[in-house]
Length: 194
Image (cartoon, rainbow, N blue to C red; front, side):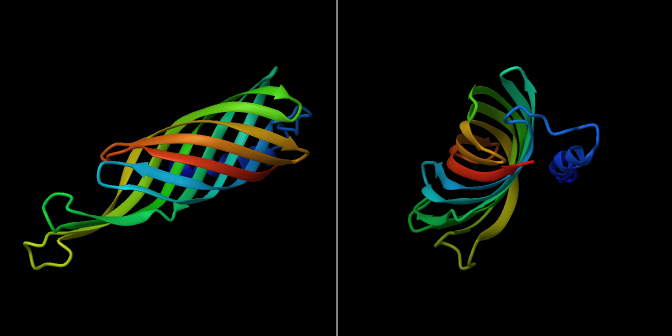
């Protein structure tokens, strides 16, 4: 958690340092972005959608028409639900998706003065919880708790430059160790580049 917090603070520290001046090239420097979108997890028992919300901090550098940088993100989701007959007839399993922490790298190509296409990859950590009730027992619920699940995220998107403001559209796929089904997200981001 400390590493993640330091990674989110790093772009702000770099932006304040005199040695790092604002470059005239588009899609460079630090940015903050509000993120919203659709969150979908598909598995045999749970196949549900929710709304994704949160924020990201990025820092990008230039190498000709290429852009490369780091990104940190914190999001939440409204995704929750229940399924019956998961393990035995009459049982009930419920879940809720909590916060998701992400840190990774971005690599992009400027295709015009106002458009950059990019890919991303990194580590993601999901907090998810749930409960399980078996009709053969009297305890209610038989199990209840939450846990953290680490994994990887791959994504691709487009960023549109409007002066210091930016708009991002992005698709990303996350896979978590210990959870069945992949997580698919389509997002839109509105932000400011310093």
